[in-house]
Structure formats: structure tokens, C-alpha cells
Length: 331
Image: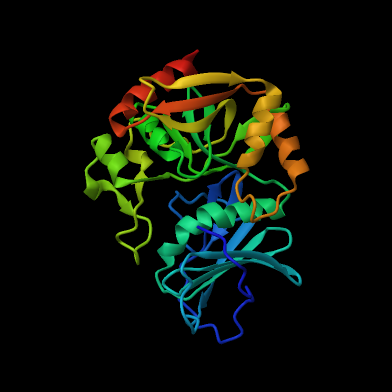
């Protein structure tokens, strides 16, 4: 999603059309008890308490006027609330309204397919809630091996999800995609579980031998969207649905046609902290203070090894790369 000049971002002042809500259920997501009337791709838990409440406010008309040429995303304070506003290239809007504590999200949108808001809710909208709660999250994918979490971190498009898919196919347990929510135990970082979906391209699935009809549409209204979901519960390692101590961080630095195998470089704690600080989820649109980002990443890098990882070019080397990274994890 690309930021352009802000549009007004105001909560619509035209009538909201009510919609039939599902019976609310409680889920454990990123370490929080989440009470939602939008069904989430998780098993409900028997707990009526809630750290975060998600409710569907209703449908609104599609805005008049031309659609933007690129996705617009706005994040702004509105009195006693915050608004995360999306306006897509089809002219539809999707809004998430928050209380100032980040303990309640109200969803309002102009298209009726509620499942189409799930991906944005589980990633960007949840990251915004954590930011309001004073706990920004890392932009990383997490996998679990022998009870420990390993983070794949890097810029969008660098190959985190592709490598995560190969590691899942090789037997690692999938843990979280894009959003790595941290907590602390005895000054050691712990990664919280996300949800059992991994975003990949059909080309990645084909390289791993997964039939196209086993991949799930992320957006029902955009069946040709270039990325799909794979249900990681069906992978050999399955889904690790609980917290896990962080064992190592891999900072992906791109691919090279000159490599026959992954290249790994250990970073000093200072180098690791500086590199990680650029990869908090939502930078720059959440305007996370640079000092806070560096403080958080210094704390992580002070207790956890951080490696720079460069991969060979080509999906034909994907399984080889996964085996090499797993061997490194075992060390």
C-alpha cells in the first residue's frame, strides 16, 4: 500500500447502513484476548474477557468522485479517537476507528464482503492498535523450531514470506506473518503467535509443489490479486499457537545471482539494533519516534543474535536456501 497526499480521513457523515453481525467470539491473537464479531481465522477460546474489542459498525456508501490511482492510507487523530483510513483504486473505503487506549476497533467499509477486511485488520490495523497501546511491533515473519522463535525481517518484497513458506514446507512451525508482537520475560524477548495464514505468490506455491487450488483468496472481491494465503495448519510443521522465546533474528538483504547458497553475516549488537530499527511495522505512517524504535531494537539485539542474510536468486534454489538456514538455526 502506498501513501499519497492525505485525503480528509474524516469518519463519514452520511448514514451508516447496519449489517448483520456474527455472534462475538474471543480469540488469542498476538498475545491479546481479542473479542470480535468479525470471525477471525483462529480457534475461539473459552474466555469472556477481552484486552481488545473489534466490532463491525456497518456499511457506508462508496464515496463520490474518481478513485485514487494508488491506495491511500491515512492515520490521524480525531478528537478522542484515532482513524486508520484506506481508499483503494476501485474507489472503496475501509476505516478503522480506535479509542485512544487502543482497546477498541470499530470497522466501517463501503463494500459488503467482510472477509475482505481480514488481511488489513490482522496486519496494519492490529499494528496501529499496538502502537496506541505503547507497544509497536516488528515488521517480521516468525517461525518456531525446537520451541524457539526465529524472525525473518526485512523490507516489503525482500522475500520474508517466500523463505518462510520454504521453511514451513521443510518442517518448521509457522508462528506469525508480517507482525511480530514482542513481550518480555526475565529481560528475554518473547514473540507472540499470530494467525495460521501465510501470504505468498502462486509462483512460490508452485515452486514448493503446492497446487494452486489449495491457496486461499485474500480478497474475495479481487480474485486476481497477485498474492494468496496458504493455510499453514496443513504444512508439515503446522501452526505454533503460543508464545515462544526469541532465539535469533535474520535480516534479509535481498537476492544475488552470484550466490550458490545463502550468505550469512553476524552483526554486532549495535549494528543489529541500527538495522532492526528501520523495520518496525508502520514506519513511517504511524510516526513511531526514532528514539523509541532504537531503544526497543537495542534491547532485542542485546539479548538475541542478529544476522544479515542474503539469498541466491531464483525460486529453483528456494529449498536449498531453506535447508541452509535451518542448519544455521540448529547451530
